[in-house]
Image (cartoon, rainbow, N blue to C red; front, top):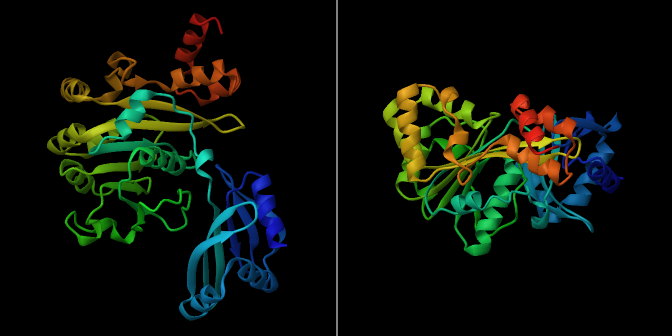
Length: 340
């Protein structure tokens, strides 16, 4: 019965499942939750789920501590799980562990891949919720580890389990987010990933980047311009200047069409781009007046350019491209020039 529910979730593109005693079983796609089963999750089904996923020692831990987490391996798939069993709270969360070969956003920009492999500096992964930022971060880490192993510290919510199984990844959780840069929890960490969609203490991560670590942060937004404008208004100018000097790049990911094809806006910064950003912003005081297209194709790719690439390769249709574009009029002009 439980195996059928797991298979049903995958068939309907749901990679996360929530089991709560007395409630309906829910699964989550890239966009939203949906019901997997009309009836409420029963006590007998709860026991079946524990029998399926938990070893004897894990059941003991659940009974004594009220919580257990681990990995369940079926014939077809691997699932990461967490169980909570306390008083009236009986719930379980399961997330599909994606095979490494499936973790591909289709980014063919060589400048992007060169920049994310930098030994130090800061990189922002941007997108609205449900746009696959965690999966993209996982792909970045996997690609980097093919060249060399770097000990990676991961700040991420416990129920966000879309991470590749790599020995070089240390899960730090979110409780340690407020720890000082010099805290022993960071000893030996070469790369830090903060996948929380918001950043509270920018100075901490700038300090890390300045002292030689590689930092990846996720931000919830829909464009590079809006992120840069927001940060420039939130930070005192001396801190913003430090931020730009350690900034290696930004990428916005956006799913397009019913097949959820990933399209990207990408901006990578060498020293000349950093200097230009500082001088242009100082002169204009607004990123909405800065034209990123002027930086050149070797460091900037607009979302429209990415959409056109997907159109040419027939991964999306014209209707989906216009629905996803932040600048549909400009997209229309570009398509006409290409005779599309």
